[in-house]
Image (cartoon, rainbow, N blue to C red; front, side, top):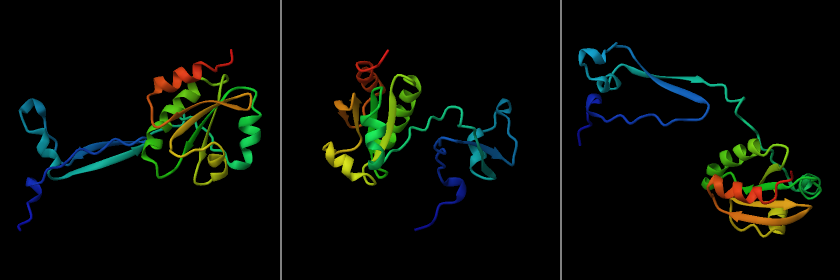
Length: 167
């Protein structure tokens, strides 16, 4: 079977990654006002230029905790606590991480937020019967008050949090 030439290959767009800014640069300058085909610039002579973006201002790192920190950080907390039980191999967990990060910014001072890796801290996961990740549990006064299983919309978590917010 013959291999298609470079000019006949379809080039798909580069996916957007957090923390990187990718742009296409061409060694040949083309102008849309002259009616040239802008799509052809990607076929040959193009290159991708990536530059790092500053993401530290928007980043809130929700801390990971372990079995050894559970008692002091969660059960003895003076404000309500949201804990996300997650695993590194879990796709839906990666979907919910930015939502939990945003909620941590929105409810700073009124709520504490932690993540616990169920692979690294299985005792705590077993104690609360975690069978599926992600699972989000709300604790208040050292007791489990509510839980949400699966990757859910931000609004669902927000409404649950608002029921336990300390004013």
